[in-house]
Length: 457
Image 1 (cartoon, rainbow, N blue to C red):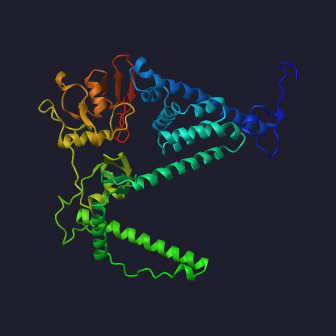
Image 2 (tube, rainbow, N blue to C red):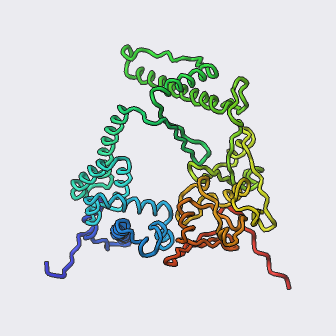
Image 3 (cartoon, helix red, strand yellow):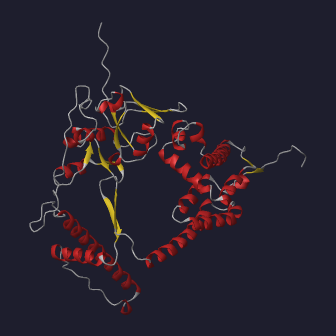
């Protein structure tokens, strides 16, 4: 073949070209084939651009470039300049942070042996193991990536997942042999207002806890149809399967009984009706305290959602029905906040420096989460800070207050950032050293008043 003479293999009907072949395949036979070629070329080009972007991000992470040049964190640059949303920011930063320590995987991605999709899957899997496990995964990718470029993309990820599962199993087995150092209970809320509770207790506390829960379950929710299962040795395979299904159903019902019993032990309320138990000892106020932000119409006709503010998960969208159940059946505390004729919460001006009680609740309801750029700190654990400093004649009014994480609050007090809140509810953060600005829109959950119609005439 003479120099400069480019020859391409025609697309083979019924067989998709492997990644290595796609670049030298002739897609120009007809309109439909050309459309496929355009897709393959566009996605392949996007993949290579992501490889360049990740390489650049790795250097930024290693050398702290955005801090030294712009005075801002990398996620703020990604959000403001590159217009990457939270999920994409976290993904790109997580990939770069891992590939800093996975040189073989980084080389395979740069060489085109791994796609951006595969890289994300590998990094997700690596998140389940420790540093030694990460190195094992990097070695496996170095071994497999060149030869797996011709296979389906998922096959290499399956190999990685198998290795990670083995490493996690070994770690869990080692952890199982170790005594529990600290008793803990983790509560993980979901978007619909439900949640998952799990934890672990040491050998002194767990038996007492388990026995107390089982005693309460036996007393309040007696098991009237105890399992009557055959001996698996005397049954055929089908009967064993049926017996196992029966046993699983019984185990599930036991779990439900324990959940109700634990709820009643902790709250002193009936798990079904939420009514106080007659023989329950006093447990605090007995009234759950929840913070909801919603329109009045939400509680009247359920036409709009409500936002639950939680220190565990920031702001969560819940259904109107859940909000009403908390307020009605559970008797949760509710707060009433007064606003003026333009929708701003009445404050205390210069009479008081710190926003407490109903004033803090009002700022929570307006902001829902930390207002610092790209921050994910839940508002419930953030500070209420003045936009115009108190020492500079700033007032303690909602128009001059904002929820702010402790880290950004400290940075603002050191003069590294300034915050400006505009009359239309928008905000501007400015990095003092470089002048880099981040604009934030008016909180999306607040009602927007229509502009006044022009005067007739």
